[in-house]
Length: 133
Image (cartoon, rainbow, N blue to C red; front, side, top):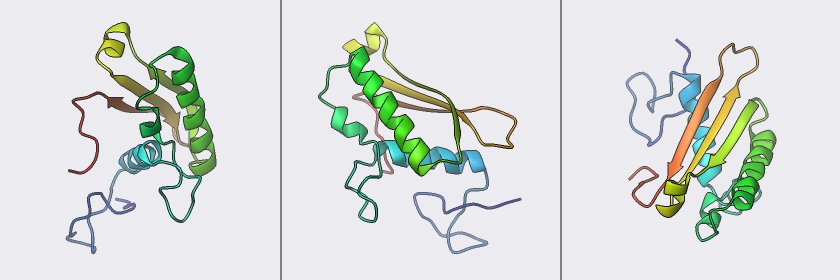
């Protein structure tokens, strides 16, 4: 069973200093979540890292803004996660979701030499608690 990077939030492991991801999909989904939630300039070692989804918090939930978010996600993934092959990036909100201030991001990807497509989804709404707390 291959082991990957440390599982967040950090906790003591039984076989290693920290618990580790044992599934590559979980590790990649964690990286995607970090990429979306990190604002440019927040990562001290690389000020260009991150989509900064919070910067769109007070933008109108319209097609052009969702298109900008999608293109920014595409650019960041190609720059920082070049090992992924993106099939589709969907940033969407139905009429009901717009009225509830909700936004859904769906990234369909695969890893070269992988045979199946994987889907990463992140939903933003006023009731969502995103993070480790």
